[in-house]
Image (cartoon, rainbow, N blue to C red; front, side, top):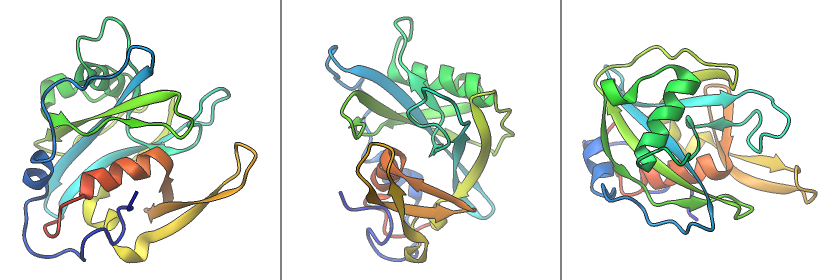
Length: 202
């Protein structure tokens, strides 16, 4: 996959990021095999005076958590009572960072589902737009949070690598460094999907 950094050109040109993103989304429920474990993350976007930002969390260090300590989007496993993938994203976001998307955000569609590196989980990104930036209240699963400017995710100079050795074989993974954090893996791939097709804007 081509990564988010340098995917198109440098920022500029005036395209509206959310409108460009919306054209690549679907409001139909994704079709995922019942044999696959299913999860959903919330890609939460807000526009401020300095342009668009997206909410990211740093997961707490926890035994048994495949994403322990990583930068991620709020989200988690889909439960049987969840009526949709977006409902999973809303529930998990409320639990993890105290933001009620059902009340304060517009759901604009789903990005393409992605499988984790091990292929054990299918993750559906649900995209929400907030009218204003809100304060998050992290629970014990979240070490910290940050509103990351979208323009910073797309700057070529923020491109980096992350050395992953958790599964025995050491691998240098494409990554992006923002705000003192390194984003890699599935979250990096979702960012790439989010930025694809956006040539300009902020």
